[in-house]
Image (cartoon, rainbow, N blue to C red; front, side, top):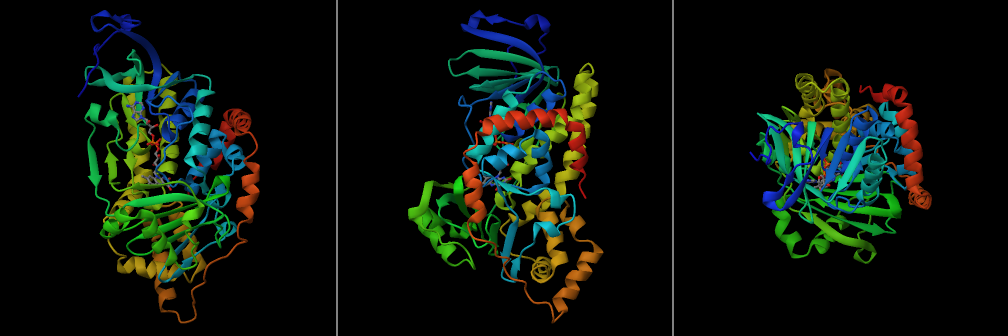
Length: 490
Ligand SMILES: Cc1cc2nc3c(=O)[nH]c(=O)nc-3n(C[C@H](O)[C@H](O)[C@H](O)COP(=O)(O)OP(=O)(O)OC[C@H]3O[C@@H](n4cnc5c(N)ncnc54)[C@H](O)[C@@H]3O)c2cc1C
């Protein structure tokens, strides 16, 4: 467990000069110090500062436009209300984000739904696909423009300050070697799946293996039969995806079983092309239309951490990095940031009493666990590389034939309900009846006008997103109480 040069420091430590190390140490007090200015960190900073907290947001990259490169960036619809409360919905639409219901293929047929047929609240909140290149800078700009947030780019946190066993701040280093100590009532680790803060804190962490790997690239002029909706092929055990996204691009991705790793290592794009050639009603993968590099990720275990300890909380991937196969991490980064902010804001805006902050952290931990544990277990079980079990086969076969079961699957896939909530006695009964019925036929792929929505929204990307972010964020901050009412999850 690392400690700073001033463990248990008092307010007299402010503006200390460590002349013995020939370096300058600034020390400043904040309500919250957040490590990592990506999705989770920027969202938490924005929400916390809106509630009156003084926030330091530290990011090791120095470019404000930095973004995560290895991500297929489907944001599940359950996270849409958080995007709306941040005030970013208009800005992401303007920037070309594609509303992305997912059409799933299994060998039993296509499982497709019309968004308008979904029950509220899911019906009112689309899933989105937007490149991280577009989304991350937007979130960072929003956080930096929020009163109370001090965005500190190029600051790598390398140690935790402590008072006894309680975390009381962070030590950060800039590229030029200058050191800063920031004391805070609460430290938030938003530093991703390989969290260095977890290592510094000795945070209990479980790793669950993932027997798949991923490759993805963007392709231009690659329309889908499903228009702006996404396609996902569950090939049992491998998977493939096509996501229309902003900029008029289509992201083609695959997550093959590790048995196929030698084939992909030899020539990833040729292997991916062969895989896409075999996809029912899939788009052609034409290497000549590729924009940018083909990106691969060979190891992506599920990471599950204890979400809090005294004075310290984990959000986003730092708390839980589930198998990317299900496209849940960006949404959970947004949601866990909002849950954290809602839980701790009252304690921070009182006097920040450590006992009250820790009670609030316990409430956050319970909310995180209630919201995500069941989903994590589902994701981790499938990432073992296993084939469909008999129950899954019955469900997929029935959902390909029955609209009601499709909607239940859409609610679970959009992470509005847990796998257990999906499998009610009614769902199980219906699933069995549909499977034995001779009259229920596979409903097939719901085709939509190819290309039209993508082109229309790509045109809108010419609108300056920055102005829209500022305008909408101000409205969201002012109308927070009203929009919060849409948060109910069925
Ligand atoms: C192959 C793949 C595909 C994926 N596809 C999807 C998808 O389709 N949909 C989806 O929802 N999710 C997807 N994900 C998951 C998604 O990318 C993550 O869940 C998401 O990025 C988590 O955001 P975050 O803010 O928690 O962390 P990150 O985005 O990882 O950001 C962490 C930040 O912390 C900073 N940092 C780290 N250490 C320090 C330090 N010591 N000091 C200062 N700063 C630091 C980093 O520079 C970075 O900016 C995918 C992941 C992978 C690997």
